[in-house]
Length: 379
Image (cartoon, rainbow, N blue to C red; front, side):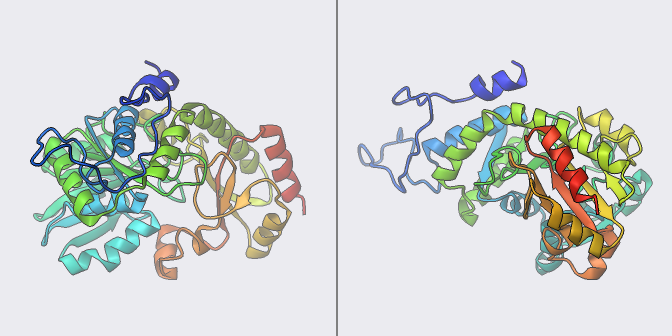
């Protein structure tokens, strides 16, 4: 099946109990046992399993083309649970520009578990090799990165990891598996913020972790159950509905992002544009070796804060907000939003300046978006 057909028919979309064409919201915390010691009882308690959640995880397996998938109450829950596969004394390697929430967890919480961390330029394969120590256990990959869309070579890093018997975790939120397939390249775990493009309507907080390794899956499932980071059934139903249009939504959003990036790249008021779909973008060739498009997210930098503030005052269509991946275009200010949890020094190391804006393109008519951006920059 091709993507759009698969997202409609490739998993459990019909309720097995009633034949309903939309999986119902099984709004219950517990389930009646037909008899005592009934071994055939499939459901006991919704923290363990629930028919709506089971349907969602079946959908995630279909989406990721994975053997196993686990749903979580947020993207950060998926990320942190995957990092909890590390043990005391282990060492993990992160990209220097890793997502702010992941960076904060790494700096504020992992040391309490005696876990060492390194932050490196993951586009530099020699630096990846040289950062591996005797106690290294995991390499954590994020490409394109948030918010500067930096690119690293998933395939080559996985080869290095396998040579040293290391786990690889890939945050694939920006591209999704419809455009980039880390599991197919050999990654051990893929994590995604389902709040973003998978759900696609800015009304859910959720995450997923997918893997082809049964032992990893069983640990993630155990942690999900015992940490209690489960997605609610109402949110699961909304995600199931949102996934059905994911392919169509992303196609339009990516097309819009490419045109907006090209517009901004030529505009004299714009200092820098960061978008893998531009041939001038560092890592463009590597990105298109492992992805089928440039994605729906871009970042750009204006020359000073006054210009940035005036631009935002004049902009009308995109909402100014945290997050990305909705059907509406969303513009955000990483320094005060997604990366506000980092210190000024940490943001500076990552290249996140006060004049940087990130745009997640929605599905609006491109003519309207272009007119809005041209008008906002006409000052």
